[in-house]
Length: 156
Image 1: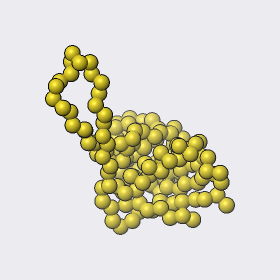
Image 2 (image 1 turned 60 degrees about the vertical axis):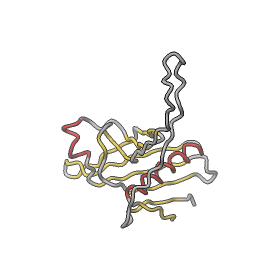
Image 3 (image 1 turned 135 degrees about the horizontal axis):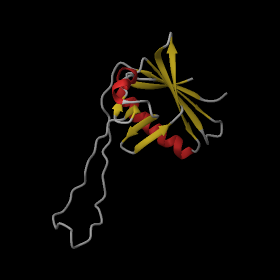
């Protein structure tokens, strides 16, 4: 069968961010300050957003599948009663699915809302990885997000 993983909440969670060093910029000598610059250390909390600038507070269930040859895969995020429904009328419409960490942003527009009796009840978002490099990048995000939110991987 196809390998599959599920991320579940665990009882304990501590922030496990990673430092990021930014190389010195190449400013022309006429504008360069002679003081030595030290590296900038940035800690970016991994987060998920449906509306840019508004962090999703609900922790999703995540299911991962990967092809047998390892060249591609898919992650399905399911959010029950996501917080975006509480603030969407004030902030704006859902514009996509954004996974943000210190490496940048992974995004998808494959987002579907689930309604029960005409009221929003959940969101399912899919993120497709078409190369081993995209898979590795996604897994780095998930490791950071999992550490921050107390999730753990269970191979099924």
